[in-house]
Length: 374
Image 1: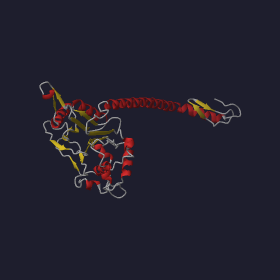
Image 2: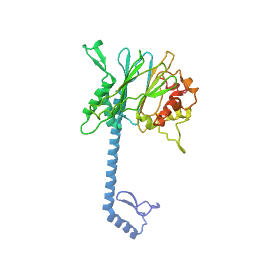
Image 3: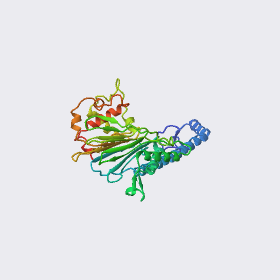
Image 4: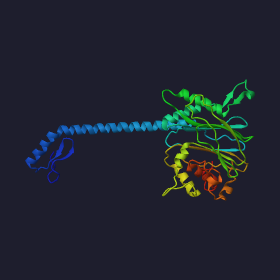
């Protein structure tokens, strides 16, 4: 292709495939060299063009697949949330709050709160080993297999509340039956709270120990023995009982909480000891809205007086927390000593995350957290 007279174009500029620009006054030898080169390299050029077109097609196909997978994961997330309680049951003398924060679209954590009868409420939390869709599918199976109440005319009151140890034993058998060539395991914790007697009966399957914060400032980790679900078919699950006092708070949480708050003392590191409450809460809220390495599940139940309020505390991945009273917040703020020392957890806390948890719960300010109350 020749340009119009007066136009200056580089000799041999290619504007599209097989189209070369030559000025009218181009030397015949130069024009011949350009045409000879074009003819000699035409096959290579065609191959490169074909490869580029193939890459464009593959890129478009991959983009479509990614969009489709993203849509499917969003649907899976919505379906998984259908298995979670929308709101907590109203229980006289007890306030229950929770936080569910998956690290990605779907989570390997699940929980439930069930009103069992006029005197009892069931609290359940589980964490499937693994991440992503496989772990989420396990939680769906766990939720469907969870049986906490037996109905029958032959039973007293026409029903029977299944003891926590038996609940986990049934779940364990279901998990073992689920396995087909691959091991499926999960941790779990189930307990029933009688709000007339304030007795909490529970059993644990390898789950992080629940933390009981007493109204007088002391605390204890509730011990009970039990293996992971899906490992040993006939292993028993120890059943324990603890009695609540007014103002006590019981916290359930998943291991995602410890992952989110890994803090190591040392040079240029932040220590959990002496951490300022405002800074901690700011970090807490930041993690709640940011990207998480694991799901967090925090669950709290409260044996309360009529004037007490329940606060929904926002952490990071999966965590459940149960709180019994907020009337003692002022007492905690008046005691500036180290929370782990005050709560008598020295030597028992294996993670600085637990110390941070106690510190934050003890010092929950009412005004800044008002937006989180639901």
